[in-house]
Image (cartoon, rainbow, N blue to C red; front, side, top):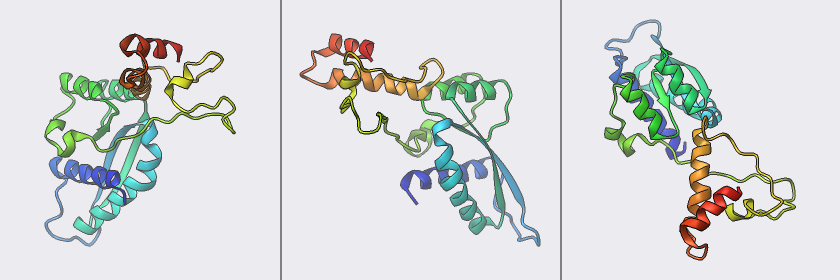
Length: 194
């Protein structure tokens, strides 16, 4: 089990314990069943449903004898946050940026101070990936290559996608951090080019 999967499983355990789903005092004949409602940004769906949820179910069953099921919603962070603010019942919200967590906090939908959690509530670090056509005919190697004339990019909308916001930072920041690129103006030009 990867470190990220273990961290998410621990976070889910802490959620159950803090939320009053304490381990059973005495074993009963039939296992108690719990449901955890998880809202998470869309790129997490595969790892959550195939690794994290099953690992946590096994862990919690071994620790408490309880059966846990998950109801999950995977969407953009913007959609997740809006749904929760509009009254969606979520036990756990996994967001790709802090601004949406702050938004939930301001609107009194978050009881936990994620800054006090292990790693300040960060459970994974996902790299951005540039996907190219088979054979990479334009020889795309880095962010700067995406700004070349004749290169077209399919890019998510940063108004609705937190991942797109991270991509904008990477596109801008890669040029800004490149000492040969020319600094801030070159970073803006690269971002505009992409």
